[in-house]
Image (cartoon, rainbow, N blue to C red; front, side, top):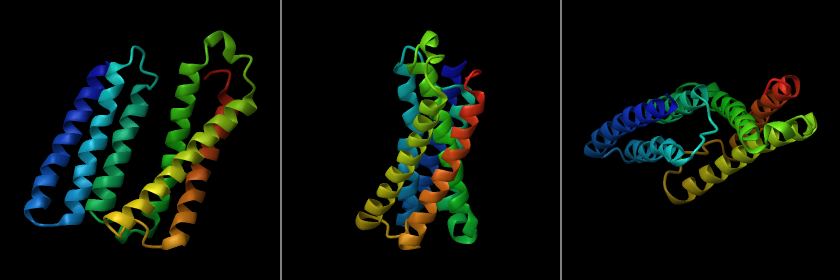
Length: 188
């Protein structure tokens, strides 16, 4: 079932991005065709999960990944939600922090043997989930910075203030998921 979901979503999303890439390339809209090209690449990443013997990610995480891509790439960049709605960027950074936290919980369940999970303290799980969420926020901000230096000049319109707000929102989302992991550790 997971295999079919990954293949279907990867194909559908990449076809949509290919269509947008061609459309905006023909219109000479360099900002949007670059976003669509990036969308093609990131939509195909989950296909690499098919090479794993045991995929650690459940269907809700896989669907959430594509929903996040849709909200970020299509709605945010191509449909200009980032410009129209001041709260859009911060909200997505918060949700990304939560999402990466849940990815961390999945990795914990995958990497730590079941018999050893009871010996892992809730504090370690909390720190792992939070650290993963914060690290992803930092890496994303580095991506935005390098992207502005080399390609678009539109990713960090708010400069340092935008970066700090994004990092705080990513941290906030990570804290929410890390606190969730504290209370749900026995069921995770």
